[in-house]
Image 1 (cartoon, rainbow over the protein chains, first blue to last red):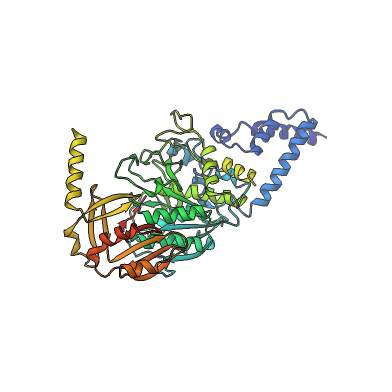
Image 2: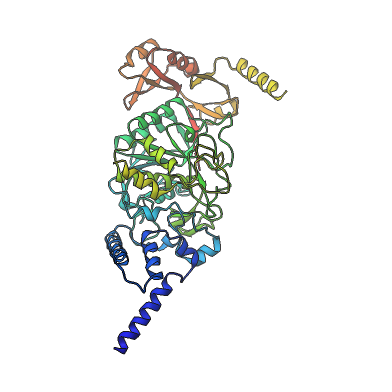
Length: 399
Length: 128
């Protein structure tokens, strides 16, 4: 009996402390249903009533769902603790060091309770790729070099591996290694292009993506001077139900200047700027009347992703090791939007690219101490920062 | 005053490069040869537009046709050879004399059933 009383006291004490313990920042910024219900019960643990019973059952239900989803999205990928674009990080020292705002993520881990991108094929056009990377190889289904028309998409020995980093942000596997992509259960086609590229090779890159079943294509690049042929090819894909995502650039300039005619400004493209760890617009992010949305990509610290270096020769303070990096710029923001679009297609394969764009804009988080006009738009912040959870839920509701 | 100066500059640029232009969104974009670049790669001619954006050209043109329009008529009219078709509506064509690249691509642009016609430009793609 004494033992039972002691156990009860300890249990009540433990439950009572659980809601307010630890870092208040972390608890305030884990807005899952599970957390809310846990807090509610912690504060009312002395009265067991039918409502509480119902809530307890809901917790058990959620716990059951979480157990089921654990094999799909593991919490043990070691660098997930730094993934502030996905969720509030679990590494307290990292949070303190970079002053990470509690609301800076795109609410991606919450969207994972609904989908991780199953059944969706993404394509990415970039400079080169490490298709053997431990965190990418399981999700790469095809590779193509649009210049040579071969499958060799690897880099020259001292090249920067831009494509490996952008790819990881979309589909890095949940495999207890390294980082995690936004859509870790999606599959990807990697398409290599050159820095100096002919328009026909660009058109063929898009054509390859379409012929191989891509639903969304990431382009973390731009020419500032898109030709009619390339613009028309992108429009054709849009009309055929494929969403194209482009990065806005890192010059901190307006794209509305007369000599800029960038791919990211096309009406049938989602143009992406960058937000940072303080939950404001990144200072470098280019903007303009045709840029649609911001996504987290950092200011002093980028977002953790895959990398491909020649040993550790590259002098880069953002390196975690030779295979992982903190990657920043609108090149990093764009794949985050691409990954979220993949999540949306996963819950509703029938939504059109226009619906995808409209949902993303409509559900955007209005960040920054700025005013948005009656259409919800701001010159620097576009329509705000992407919200993965709200976008996926809305896409699902359109089913 | 600034606008007046810009207009005069554009007028002079246009006059000097009357034959070197292509169509973008229905507007003529004039180009000036960048002679210093030519010797680097003899297969590519380099140009800059009025904003100093650099473009390379070869002897290739990309033509996009409207649905159900055939390329044969254009090939024979301009003595072009078909390098390859891309997708349902794009054609990569070779012209006999690359000095005529802008004249021929602009003429093709005016043909019935043509959606776009440009030299197969070589551009720098900026990683972001």
